[in-house]
Amino acid sequence: MAWRLLGRIHSLDPSNDRLSSHMQGPVAAVFGDRIRIYFAARNSAGKSYPAYIDVSEENPLRVLNVHDAPVMDFGPAGTFDDEGIMPACIVPTPGEIRLYYSGWNRRVTIPYHNTTGVAISVDGGMSFRRKFEGPVLDRTPHDPFMAVTPWVVRTGDQWRMWYVAGRGWLRKGGALEPIYGIKYATSVDGIAWNRLSDFVIPFRHEEEAIARPTVLFADGAYHMWYCFRDSDDFRDGPGSYRIGYAYSRDGVTWKRADHLSGLARSPDGWDSTMQCYPYVVETKIGFLLFYSGNGFGRTGVGCAIWEGGFPTL
Image (cartoon, rainbow, N blue to C red; front, side, top):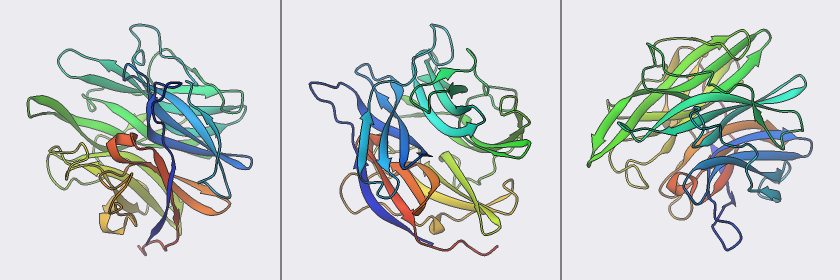
C-alpha cells in the first residue's frame, strides 16, 4: 500500500493584506473540472473560520482560486459555534450541499468545548448558512466530553458516521490537553444520530488521541485513514500527529494497521514534523488524500495520490 506524495498545494501566510493564517482540516469535493478544498483558517484573534481554494482536478497542485474570506459567519453569542468553525465533511444532497462542521466555544474549567453542526449551501458551495442554531452532535451520557469532526456517507436510505468522541482531559505541563478517539453512528436523515457507545479504533496507550476519520469503500472492504498523536510533546515534537490506517468488512469492527497507512513524514520541509487531518476524495485521476502540515496546518495543505493495493481481508 502506498500514497505518492505530490507536495504542498498552498499555504496561507499572513501579510499586509491578510491577517489570517493556517489551513487546518482540509475538506475536498469535486465541482466540475476543479476540486474545492475547504479548510479552517485562523483570523488575527486566533479564531478558526471556513474558507477555500480551488485546484485543478487533473493537477491538484495547480491553484485556480484562493478565497480566504469566511464562507460562513460565527454563530450568535451563546450558541455552540460563536467562537470558531472548522469544516469536517461535505455531502452533496438533492438541491443543496451539506457541510458538517465543528463549532468552538471557550470554557472556564477547560480551554474549549467542541460540538458538531450542519450548514447548507444552495449556491454551489460558495457560501453556507447553518441549518440549525444548535448542534446535531453534542455531549450525551455516553459522550460526556465532545462529539466532533465526523465523516458522513449516505447509502440509500441510511446515513453512516464515524466521528471523534472525547475520552477526557489530561494535565500536562500545567495545561489541560484533550484525548479522544473514533466512534460510529447511524441515522435515517443525517440529523438525528444513533450512536454506539464503544470506540471502534483501538488505542496504543491510554494517553493517545485519534482524530479525523476519512473512510472509503473499495475492493469489498472499508478503509479508514485518521491521524493520531501522543499527549506529550505533540506540537511539532516527537508525539505530534501522524497518519494511521484501519480496515473493516462492515465499517463497525476495525483492524488497526498503521504500518499500512502508506504515508510517512517528509525528512524536512512543510510536513516533516506533522501530518494531520487526512481527507480522501475520488477524482478522475484516482484517489487523492489531502492533509495539513506542520503546526496543525500552519505550513499549509498538501496531497498524495493512491498508487497501491488494498489489504486482503
